[in-house]
Length: 375
Image (cartoon, rainbow, N blue to C red; front, top):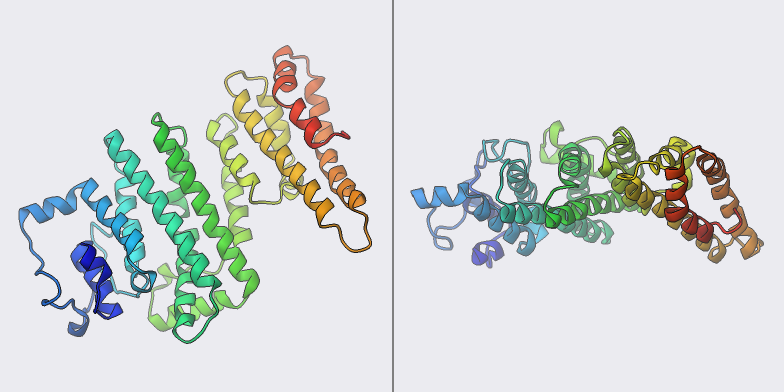
């Protein structure tokens, strides 16, 4: 398997085909004989019962997928292939890297996985997303020269497909498994969400640096003959984060996962803009503090929001524009945050509910006065 993944001495196209056909057991449309793996290099493909059982076994499939995503070079795994849709690869994909995702996702969707297998599967999905984020950061951060331009465009197109075509599937894992009974699965699902957001941030940075990259990626897709289903329209990272925020906000406030997801998003979006555009966030969180079973989740989100407010004030002080005093810049940002918090907090404290006031006193006010001492 290691020799197959490394593919020493084989052209890039042959290495990609070998991984697809021999390791992932998928078929390639109109396979050119010159691109087929060399029989002298690789053992012949067998169709024994043991081989089929191995490919149908969840753990075996995951081990193979993890080996490819961890060891194979992205120059090989991003080579465009005309992969034939099948039961194993039901969705449209055009390279080994995305075929690996499909393999992992097909197992994530299985019910009644053994606890140990379940942990490995979600860890593998997290690894795939983390490696994709690293791949994008490396490819999109390089200076474009010659063949690197094609790799740059392929990487950007990959990021677009992950953000748009796989968003619903990945967000579904969050809805279903964020509060999984197995603690290790919860950790892996949080890593999946963070890696997914990393991909969006990397794509956004790429667009900021080179606004023409989206058009370049679409041009490359057209020249490679990919279908429209695999080449979604351009979407920048800010729009992606905004869409994720909107998806999370559509959830009912009785869902515990909603507070955790919003707390995770706080580190990556403009909190002032979020609270200004969605004034119900603070009000709903403060109302939830009256529910003993939900107070800790609401407190987690409120603490994350206040932590970002403190960071914004500190950054304003450190990065004050020329001609503006540091304290004046910090006060301007602090005033903006205080304006959002004063009304909802005052209303919550005046509510005729002893439980709510006790929870607010214990879980909110210390963090509030630390972050916004002038409030």
